[in-house]
Length: 195
Image (tube, rainbow, N blue to C red):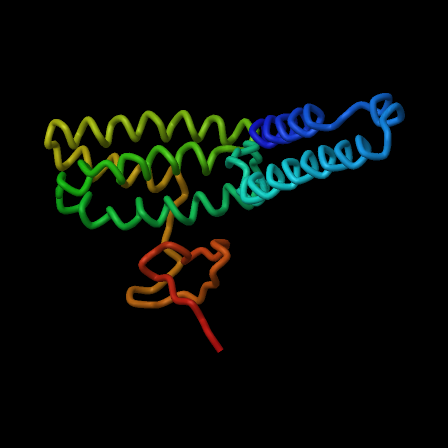
């Protein structure tokens, strides 16, 4: 946006530099008048060239900015998206497969689930977030210590506190659309229905 303003001011300054003043035009003879008109058309040509050069800049998108809006819909999407990734770890937690929990995207899924699913300003969500953060720390401490029993029990407790449960039978596909509002969107149960 600032670049557009600078280009516009530069074009205006160039056109003003080549344009004669109104007083000069009134005092000039007809021969000088054609010279003044030539200068004016030259200034308009430069202005047109500046506008043409600035054209692609005006259609460029502005930089992205988040407004921090939180709604029941954003909480719903966060619970579904990151909750499904956490639920997919149940087998690894039960069998003591620590390597699944050491991946960066899994750590991010826990962090994003906790912050996104408790984003509304209710006291219940604030309390749940505190408990989930403690359980998350216990899970990753158990992974670091290679303590399979603690990992299994703490993971089960996290699932209970976070109220995560699968509403689907094994092997069942869910119907979804491309909007991201479906509970199966972004999960292994995603199925886009097309007519």
